[in-house]
Length: 389
Image (cartoon, rainbow, N blue to C red; front, side, top):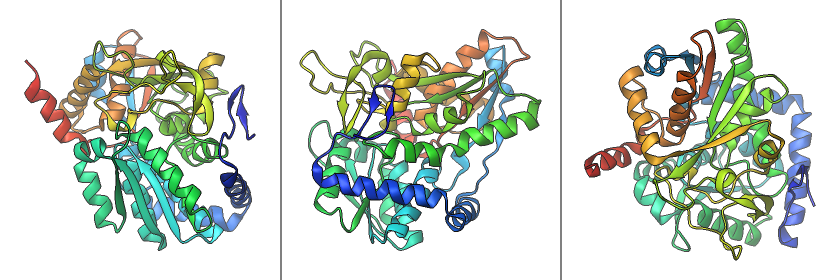
């Protein structure tokens, strides 16, 4: 059931959710065709969110690499500090269109939770956010932001107490309250139509990269890079560029050096079903979901969006993994070279981009989607520095 990307995707869900998914797809398709919805969405994206976000040349980071020029797509400048605003706004407006008074969401790094809490407040929707206890401890500032925005943050104490378990809890809530509640799924994962809806609302990133690259240096970049957890910022970056000749690089979390899995589903996983979709999943020989590990809460997930699985198999996008130490180094590079504090999620992409730039000529251009800002990660980064021998 549901849309496929090659063999991936579908909707492997309880029967009670089938009508809700059908309702959501119908509302989304009707909204896309409705000029009034598109006008209101564009207005709020501009006045509440701060779109469009700029394309910024990072000259000193480029000099560090010693090769191609590195440009940053500044999604960190959006309201709430991450690309998560794009999808939260779109699905929030769909919730109002469907006449549902309550929003629920899951969050790992907290950025999607903050964006959902903000949209809930702005649109007058009662909001609850599920978050694993491990992530609540390492992302305390975002927990406090959600609460200040009027959302109830529900700690998840089962399993690994991270993003996977928060999604499980949110799905259980949605099954029990489907008539009054919309589940604002934060990444390009889960059953159809969620991967397509999230990609649709996030594709503004890639569209703006196309437009602004032509203005900035007269052509499309040679390479575009984005980090990949569930894959929302990456699919939004890649989708408008898939039919071009631009090289596309997705960067997963390799976790600590020596870790068997990290959180690199496309690099170390194999096809399976997770959270209602057939995709690449980290799993052991018996098919049990493998424990993930990453310094970045937002990438700490055992699966990936099904469209990424298809892009991997087709060869259109190359995917690599960067370890924790690389992401921590890149965090400091961008801070010290450019005066920008990146979130740990896109720090993985920054590290890979610098390595790629060092192997390329100075006349080439690399664009990295800076999907979020690093305020939330200061405690983690400073703690890692204190533990360094």
